Amino acid sequence: MKLSELFQVRYVPPVFISLILLLGHFTFGILESYVAIILSISCSMLTELILGRIIDGKWKNLASAYVTGISVGILVRSTTLWPFVVTAVISIMSKYVLRYKGRHIWNPSNFGISWMLALYSSSVAALSIQWGNNILPLGVIWILGLIIVWRVKRIHITLTYVFSFILFSLLRSVITGDSFFAEVSPLTGPMYQLFSFFMVTDPATTVKSRNGQILVVFLVALVEFILRLNQVIYAPFYALFLVGPIAMFIHLRQAKPKQAGSLTLSPAA
Image 1: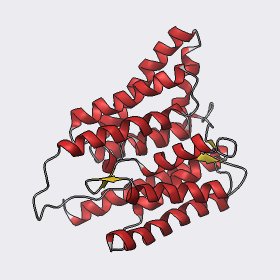
Image 2 (image 1 turned 90 degrees about the horizontal axis):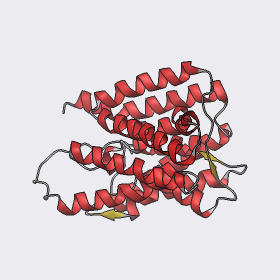
Image 3 (image 1 turned 120 degrees about the horizontal axis):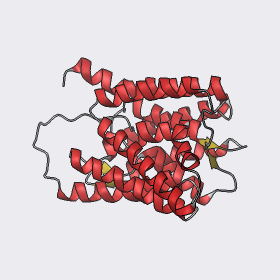
Image 4 (image 1 turned 90 degrees about the vertical axis):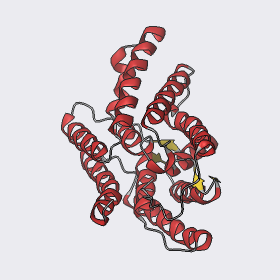
């Protein structure tokens, strides 16, 4: 991969997630506060700098930390500021503490948000706003998002998840008797856009083979379906939290050692 292409791939996620933030906030006010988003991003990037220097002995590129911080700032709902700080720090720490064969196996923001939702549900919630009848921001984000994941050769992951979610929404409506449109409507919200374009496609925490990626994201949708049937709130976060690391562990356990001198891309997470 050429240096110019590497630069473009590395900085596309930060630019795209910033677009989601701007469209979502100025259309529906998805941010808790400007202070919260600044805290999330700052703490995420500062933690990346410190731990990268201490543990890996180098100053890390902050594109990944920015994506993690802004994801936390968008997805976390709280009336106080400390959850934004703690979630951002825990998310980045997971990259350096929870490793197998030198690789982190949880998507950072998914790890931090899942833990906070499970342990501090009285103080922390997740974004649940949808675009409503205003299809313009929804259309812009989905069109740009699909173009971007196609460009980085991960569109099959997003599409598999979307089609699986729609299929399981139909099945849930049959089982529960609820409206299909009520079951599938969360897919139109900014939370699911972040989940579909960033969390499930994160190159650092997805298996290598195309077929493996398709299988894993289908299993994520399946586990989410089961959790939703059991009235589990925040099912997509918990589903990825459970399925993703197991898949990565199996993948890394079976992977052959890299040859000396091989060049790999360190993508945003």
